[in-house]
Length: 130
Image (cartoon, rainbow, N blue to C red; front, top):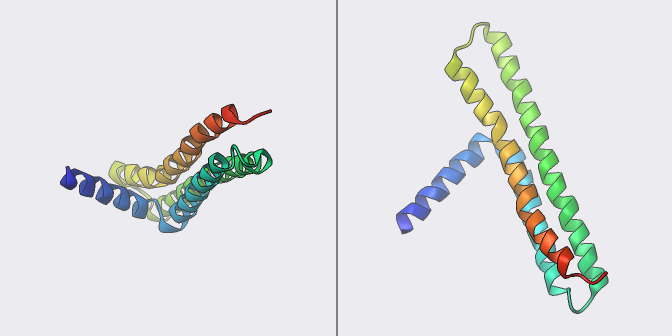
């Protein structure tokens, strides 16, 4: 079991580096912030409903920012890949597939950064008083 979790962490770290550390780090920061805001929203649910709603809104905005950064990273990655193809002339299918894979890693991570907090936001909104 431990070996499987170490392997999963290695795969995640490899994909993180392949996706470009700059954009992937920004998306990770958005994910962590969104999760923090959700937790703060749940903690303030009974004590301060205004603060809970504010935390829900911040979580929503932060998760959306992570999604947009993911798409931006993907677009910049595609432009970079096409620049490389243009400068090389002919390119193999393997090179094209590798470039596309790297470009879409930020999109996938950005989408996960949007979807995971969205589940918490839906639950939090259902529990909040109108």
